[in-house]
Image (tube, rainbow, N blue to C red):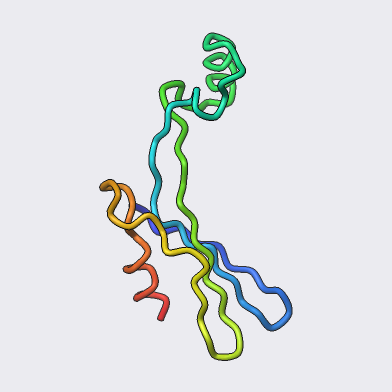
Amino acid sequence: MPETSYSFRIGDIECVALRDGSLPYPPQWFFSNIPQNELEEELRAKQLATDHVEGTYTCLLVKTGGKNVLLDTGAGSMVPSTGALPAILRRRA
């Protein structure tokens, strides 16, 4: 699983969005009001898979005043494609 993060600052506060992993979901869970054939057509037009929507688990690490605050603890070992957060945090320490 590739490590993905995005850092940004708000004044003296550093914020780091950390991707803990992802999980595929049925598209109908997100787009229940669209007929199946229209949904598949729209997904194909955007070069996306038609059999799943990839939902990512993103945690926010806030660094301020010498302290680190983790605002989400990730998805853990829910499935093989999640659980990257502990290793990412060790590498960023």
